Image: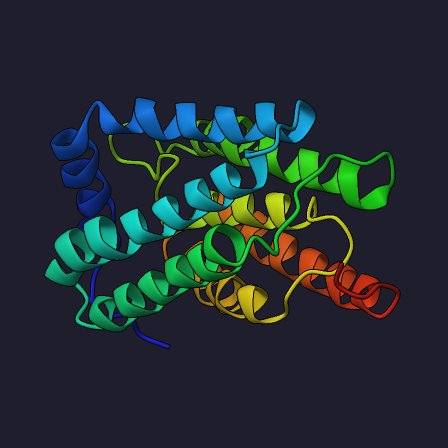
Length: 214
């Protein structure tokens, strides 16, 4: 499938985004770090805070990246932005307003896989990008769709017991769509986006058969 923009235009969007929003990238990293801390050291409000962080990240990607920057080269970004905003409201609804998302690190395949994906999103993804020649500011930083979706999958694996299927749908769809960049533009690090989407979705759907909401 032919894309409506070139690799140079695609990378230029990252450059304009990174230079315009700086130092917001640092704040987004701090938010991701806070989520990790609350997973390991949960408090009475940690579930709502983590859900709020996820909601903010998806709202940020939907409005700032897709609607403000990506629409300059791809009109489909209007649709992408709307979908990302919807995902933000799903996290707000389930996790903040209804308090139905319970995040907790557990010593099993779900917990360890979740932590691995989170660490990869924050550290491994930019390292791989650097190795493959995608260097700041011409690179997707945390807070942009691909690394942040991997981070989201990691947190979803740390939901205690059943995970609502509806909050899996949009991240999974993006893991497939975003993966196309790996083929068209040489973003090899995005291979892990598809891998994390397939792995997380299959694991959580399997686990959902074992548990009921509490």
